[in-house]
Every structure is written in C-alpha cells, then in structure tokens.
Image 1 (tube, rainbow, N blue to C red):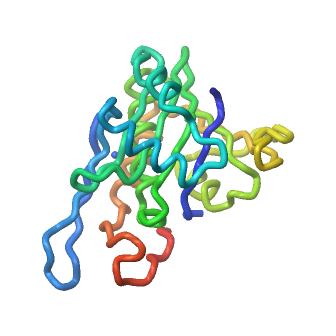
Image 2 (image 1 turned 45 degrees about the vertical axis):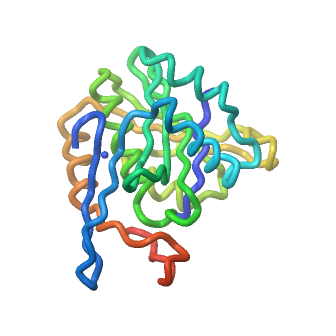
Length: 212
C-alpha cells in the first residue's frame, strides 16, 4: 500500500483540523470545511466515495486496518457539516511519509478540498519528524501533479503499469526537506491562498474553476 490514488479535478492550521469559512454572495450563512481524523463512523461515507471515483475501491476491512495503526498511519476526512466530502491518508516510516490516497466526492471536486487534505497530511508528516514526503500519481493526471508541485513535489521516476487496473504508468514524486522552516513557510503560504468554499456542483450553479 504505497501508492497515492488521487481523484479530483485540479490540476488543513494545526495537526488534526483545518477549517476554512466562506460566505455566499447572497449573504447566506458561512460554510466551513473541517479536516478531522478519520474514525470508524466516517467509513461508510468514505467507502461510498471510493466506489464512485476509483475503479478498484479499497474495502471497508482495508480502511479499518489502516486507521487502527496510528503509530505509522494518518488518515483524515474533510467534512462540510455532517457530510464527508473527501479523505486522504499516509504511511509514516523513519524519516519519510508516503501519501497513500486522496479522494474527493465528484460534486465537491475543484473546490480546494484536496488541497486542504494534503495541507493537513504535510503538517502531520512534519509533526512526526518526517524529512521527506513522497507519492505516486498517474502520468495522465496533470491536475493532481500541478497541486503536488505547489507543495514542492518534483518528479523522481516512472513506474511502468503501476496502475494496472487502468494500464497506466505512475510518476513518482518527492518533496524533500519538509522539516525545514522554508517548507513551513510554503505551507503557510498555501493556506493563506485557500479560496472560500463554493457550493457543490449540481447545486444550481456552474462548476467552479480550478484554484490557482
């Protein structure tokens, strides 16, 4: 379980929670995205999103196994009110953190949910004294790659037919020296640029443009 599976159309503060408020143009109440640790109670919603966006979704048992290994795993969900709209996880070993997956519900893609989740993972990796962060991404997923570049990831190689279910190669990417003050400032800059959360797609408005 060492590949990141990213499904979103793109191209979080202190460990445990990243919130971002927004206000609709008509003065409607502000919306808040909270990024919180994944619990058993979230798994039904997580699996439902998995089945919508991935050709080979993870099983409930696999997620249960992952979230019950807190010493080496970290999993989070992004919630809007009681609704789970995305999730992400990583595995942490000595000096390195490996993003395992990022998933966002289709109607909430292109709203910065994945960015908030990755921001939380990067901060969690720093808190756990990791010096490097790595992941794999499909070579055709240029949207995800653009997001990863924003977090300092650079290509380091290609793994042929890594995503066998779709017969596609994986681009291996690394972000180095994430323990430094320079990287902390990078994360602070990313958080400062987060845009307010818009309505989900299909809520009577046109899809939001990708964040820059």
